[in-house]
Length: 457
Image (cartoon, rainbow, N blue to C red; front, side):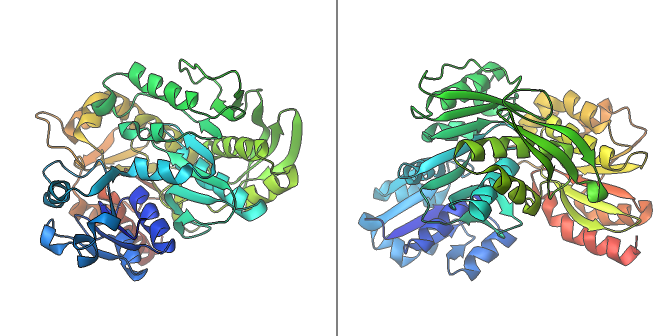
């Protein structure tokens, strides 16, 4: 019986959801992380013991004195030389990766999994909202903080479990879902996979693990070598191209919100209004609606849930909006995500000057996609590049934000560090501002909001 759970890297978005789950189940939960954050502060306020020095002596006695009843969960972001991880291994603790823990929990549920190199956080959060708001409820492990529920964890007695199926480190192969949706399978995490083909093969293997009698919903045009059981029903979805699930008659209104007709296997739901802006989110809504519909949610219920959805923090997240200025923060860290975000914003603000501040995430990704990053960022009118956020990596010689800057054709381009950003905002007084990236650029969001308020833009 698991009485205690100890997390190495507890501040990660997926790890923190698991910590909350085990805490709610009655376990003693504690953990280590490298630095404090809003997420770790929230966990501490919920009664979870967290420390920030890599020292086995800091591990609570509940853990060190009860090895037999303790589970240790770690994230792949924890380095191999972590002192606590190695001490726990030497002592013989039961140590598993985050993905294994989620896989074990999902075994006792009807799991609906959302995978894809882009869009999975918003899509899975919307799917969970549909089930929670208009259906039987669900337990959900989300890759972002839901703005409807102010958490990355939903709990329910319902048999349904919604999981964001993460392809990093092949984590999603721990899941055997009843229904799965694949939004995309672009080249990414090449530090793990090596080639784009290997990425595609991993997604194909994930799809093959859908249980007999289940459903696969895949975006039309996503090219992966599927070998799914004949006992699994296959469906396609798209933003607007006719297929099993798509949207039509799109109009964009106040606040960048879309109204559209939703087509679900020949049935039309007229006048759907999505509660968050952006063309890309209409496509995400089609995917979420498809999985919800296939799992028993009625058409009127879908329409209600789409309108009441408030989105996810750091996903096309409107942080400041007045007549003279709009500031949007987004987690986009792959060239295709940046392209989708910028085009969505440009559709919302045609003819306006759009400024983007981008922090590249990982040296390997910067090296592999520098040219593609430049092409996507060239869709902006003004580009600010911050230094590369290394995350789990050591620097790679010759790889920096200057690689991207040299390939940009946009005339107004700058490389600035974090301490220079607020002065830039004060000087430029942007009308439409985007911050983009998966690193610690999020720590600039509140200061930028405060700056814009002070400027009274």
